[in-house]
Length: 403
Image (cartoon, rainbow, N blue to C red; front, side, top):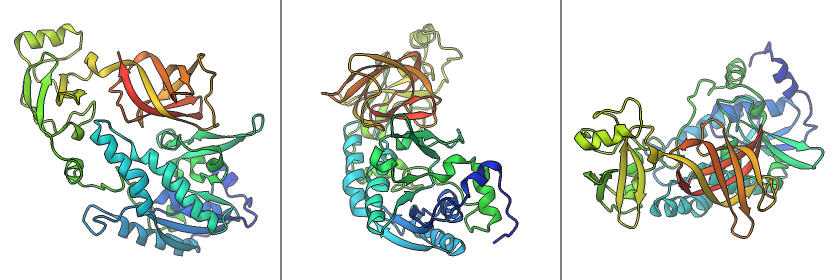
C-alpha cells in the first residue's frame, strides 16, 4: 500500500476521523466503487465489515455470470484494506421480490427496471436488516448519490452524486427515511476519476476493473435468449404506421419502446405514398433507408407497431401518468390538486427535463406529468423520477404516455 497517497480537498474532507469506531457494513460487489467506499470509511475511523451479496443462483457457473469472480475480487479487496468479509445469499429474497415482478411486468408488455426494485427490496431492505443484526450503525454502498439531513424539516434528502455522468439517484428514488437514515454513500462526493486514482494508488487489485453493466441475473448473455426460458413466444405481425405488415415479431414481451436493433426488418423500405407520408410529418433526413423503431405494442391484438425515424411523432410524448408512487420524504411534494414545476427523468442517463407535476392523488397513488418539450420513447414500466434541483424527491412507475 502506498504511503504517500495524496488527496484532493474534497477527498480530505471525506477521510477525516469522523467514524468514532461506529460499525459500518459495506456491500462489497467486487467493483472498484464499493472497494473505495470501504477504504474511505476505514480511513474515517469506522469499524468496517464487508458483505458480498449473492442475489442470483441460476447459471452462476456459466460464462455469462460473473458472481464467482466478483466474490474473489471482493475478498481480495477486503484483504488489502484489512477488513472482514462475509458471503451472504439473498437469492431467495431476490427471486421472490425482484425477479417475479420483473417477469410479471414483461408478460404484461411493460419494460421494468429491476435495479430500482433491487435497491428498494434487497440492498436497502434484506441487506440492511442483515447488517443491523450484525450490530451495524450504518450501511454503505458504492452508489454515486448523497444523503443530507435537512435541518429545517429534519428530513433526510437523497441528492444526486457530484459526478453527473455517474449519478445513480434515479435507481435509488424509492428509498425511504428509515433507509436513508442508516445509509452512507462516500463515493457520491467524488468524481469517478478520483475513485479510480485512489484505488490505483492504494494498490487495490480491481482498480482497473471494468464497470458492470446490465441486469445482474442476465449478465452478458443475449437478453431475448434469457427471456425465452421464462416467457412463451407468441409471434404476431409487425406493422408500420400505415398498417403494412413488414414482418413477424417473436412476442411483444421481447420488445421495448424505442428499440432499434433486433427487429428483423432492416431491409424493409418505405416507398411511394408511405415515404411521402413519413416525410410529410416534418422529420428531417428521413428516407427509404431510415432505421425502424418500436413505437407501440398492442397487447390485445398482438401487433408490434414500428415507425421510421428517431423523431417520428409516435415516439414523442408531452404527458405521462405514473402509479405505484414512492416519496423520499414520505409524502408528495405538493398538495392534491395543485401543480408544481420540477424536473424529471423518464429513463436513466436522460438529461433532466422540465415538467409540471399535477393531479397527485393519494387515493389512487398516481400522478401526471406534462412536459413543454416532448420526451422520447416514454416507456410503461420504467420509472419517472422527480427532482427539485439536486434533490431527488421520489417518483412512480410509468403506466401510460400521450402526445
